Amino acid sequence: MAGRDDRPKRENAIQRFFRETIGELRKVSWPTREEAINMTIIVLVVMTTVSLFLWMIDLGAESLIKLAIGS
Image (cartoon, rainbow, N blue to C red; front, side, top):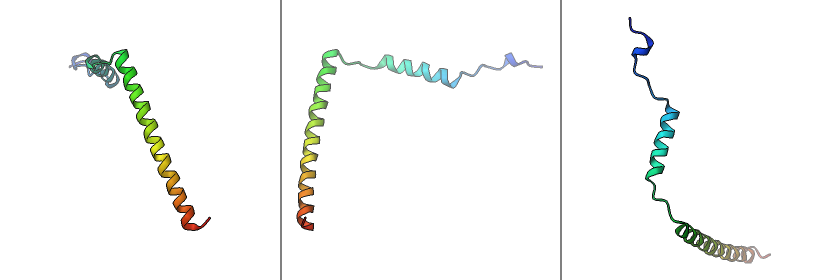
């Protein structure tokens, strides 16, 4: 009669998840500090530009709606 210890041990899903995650993070090509700063500045500039553009469109649309309804 085979005992419980004869079965191959199944790896815990949580342990496997963390082991695989750590393995993938070791493969990542992390940016240098200078690259990270430059990318952050680019993101902030693009975000500001797009938000100003959308704000101007909103102001224009608001003016057109006020003109259309006569208030």
